[in-house]
Image 1 (cartoon, rainbow, N blue to C red):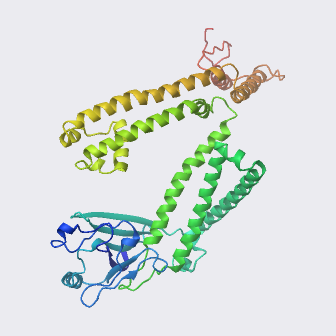
Image 2: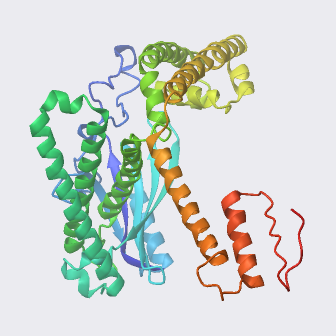
Image 3: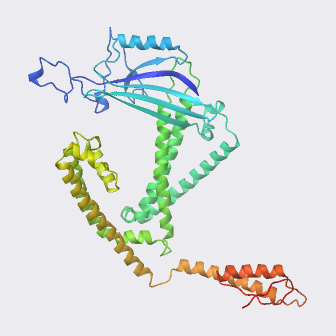
Length: 459
């Protein structure tokens, strides 16, 4: 791998003595400064600091100050270890990191020519307002999408071959198809009106699916804009910002992943013509009224336990440190992923009581109620559909039967053709026997014709 540009040290600082970090009067003589945690971008400090304000902020956003003001230090990627140590020692002696520091991030980008991939690396050190440091490393791989680089001056750096041009043509064709579907969906919306249109679940799925496709292509064109403005050959001491391009790539991947679910869910819309293939949607429709009441009751009980577990174990168990984590942890308990001993050690009284009551009420009662609702709805759907034949399956059986009839007629022509001089050979008999086995299933086929060269069989 080859490092592209300089390595950047980026610091995020917090404003001190804000409205939600006030020192109580009783401790004003003991504590003169309060350093809170960063809640929003408005809490980020951008005032110069250090000896004679030697450290000044830099706009790290892709567009002006969008993305925040940070204090940065770039390090030449060709610098010797001794030079890097001298730079870091100078920053420490100048108190580059102090009480207002909340986050220091090491950012650099490498390129692998064998895989034709960039990798943007972020190593974060978060200085907690409660004390201590949390570390996290993020590695985001970036594919250059050479088929789209054909629209940018960067195509000279990353030339596209025939396969990339083919992919570009396919994506453009797909874009035209999406635009055509958007026009058709818009006409349907105008013809039906808003209320009838949104009353159909399938219309809402179509609308969301096409909207996500449009956003995906918006990401594609925005990616082209970022690439056209990016410096791919910076000097060793100049930092090149690949971070926003990597974030855009991953957001596009997340969008595509969710849209894949919607695209395949739309298949059920086109399976409505078959009662057997649409049993899932019919079952959910049949159980919808009961499910609405059940979900309200389930969420009421589930949220009660989420708050209860957070209040009881939030100070001691990390998985219940806030309501969101408590909610997901209780959901994992339903799936069998839990640590009962940790709960018992955190609270030997409420631990067993809350856990056992939660398992009994949510898992043994509510979960089985949910299965019963779905099961009863499925039985009702089966009773409704069993009274008449599925036309789709009937057509399939008719097609298979017609195919068998054509093969039987071919066998008859070979055995009893108009040509009296035609001799049926042993090879013909074996082919006919194979055809009959396929037509009649596993039934035994006896061919009792005394033809020389063929073994006799008893019928």
